[in-house]
Length: 260
Ligand SMILES: [Zn+2]
Image 1 (tube, protein in one colour):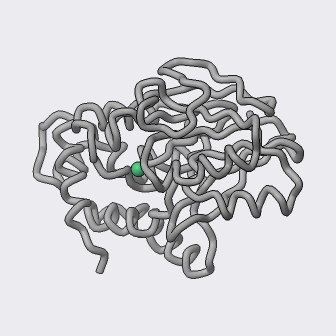
Image 2 (image 1 turned 180 degrees about the vertical axis):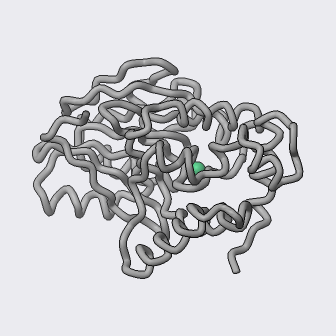
């Protein structure tokens, strides 16, 4: 489990992004700082030193704050995927699949998992029961397929689904309500999904965030992690099809879904 000295907290940014902070009360590490201003304010209020930035992929709402943070905190190490070195700002440590990353400034080791699909260079960081999964896995959903193929994306999600059930899922966006509304509409006879929709609607109405989730919860509620289940295949008229084909159909259905 994560060291009792480490805390993980969300800094909200833009409309629905979360910049996750891992800190030990002295040093702090930011995951996907799309905007520098809220991060700088958060750090100075607590007198914490920024020691590293972990990037999952190149999109601007995940990297837009990097240059200003590097300017304000000299010595910060920016970490990201070697294959995306050409499109990640100020990259200092390039990592690849399977690397064991000693996170600068913290007593924390994270494993690098490549998860192509949302983008081809997307990576996730996993260790000590924590998963930082950017725009690959959302609670009850997944990112849009901008660059990868259904085979890549579904394999990436299956890889995350195979992590221990108690793994905490730190996704980069607050999309849970829209996602679970889609999941509940996809298989309307599944009571656990309508129960979850009700619970998440209440949490959002009360102003609470819905993350972190867990891998165990996602395996039961996230249709994109259930592409090998006949109930999901049937829901998208793909009975007997391969998991990547079912994934492609579920992704298309979600792209066209508008909650009532
Ligand atoms: Zn993205």
